[in-house]
Image 1: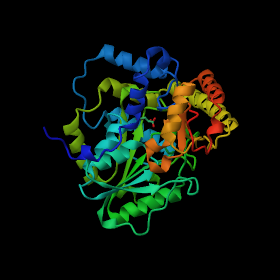
Image 2: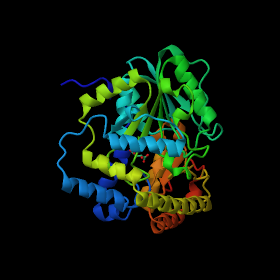
Image 3: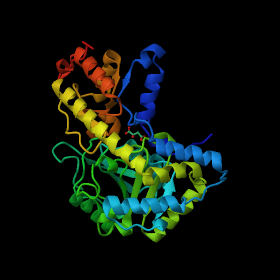
Image 4: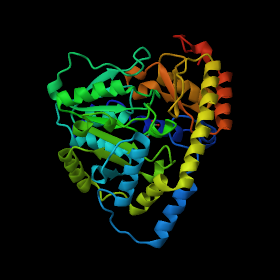
Length: 400
Ligand code: MLT
């Protein structure tokens, strides 16, 4: 038996699978009592208009294979979304519907790279960026984010520009929640242009920025030059509670790049089910769904205050939680994996260790607001009982 050499480069398990396995290995009674604040999986139900559209579609028509690029009505709805949200003109031909942003991101790593070259990756970051780079034989160059550079790390001046293929970025950022300045993304874009690499801009959390057309809510295509090297990845998962539906989109304006991507996609899968695309179309076009999304975002905003204030009362340093479903906070002990383990075992609360997003995430933990007020309050009161502040800076965790 032989394996792709890329497997050997993975020196850690996939973060979210690992968290799931940890839960599954627990006795059922204990597992059912865990407050899960680790994976970013919305708890609020998918809006009725989306579910109804899906059911109607399944009942009314047999579709067979979908079109690889995606339905024209859905792509037109995305065009309109870009106009309203970002004031950006996108053509339906420039949009390719995909089977989930995670899959798109991993696959982009294969299409726009050659083994031995390099990928620039923000650290901390969604682990798929690093894993796709390693798997496809790219050498990762980590841009180390920190509180002091506000998780918008500068590009090292000594970087070899000739061998960079890809730059991965995500704002509003997962896991830190930072909303990037346009000037920072412009810097990444200018580097992509000069190094002839592609800039991947993951906007999975864009809809957590309230209000359309604000200066914070921007698409990479708001910036000149992105039409050459920009690839934007959008997701229906979080704003519409559609994680299980598996549907996303990419926008690529460069016709040669787009052709390659489409060629790849048409080999790799047969497009996203027409029924799921119908549901996604309604997500973007149904006015009742829009009202539900506004309502849900308000709930998330209230939970954000609850979670952040509660964590601060426990003596932890927490970033302001705005434009994001994640609280990024200091770990009571520097080993974030150990901290997450202690919290899980002692408080029955699951949070994500920052190091799972890269070494620059060490010393931090991430918690989501995708649980009810009651469960967030329960998690906070459990954390209180284990006296987290006593662990702060304590090297000795024998007390654990
Ligand atoms: C997260 O929790 O960071 C991610 O959203 C999980 C995922 O989308 O794979």
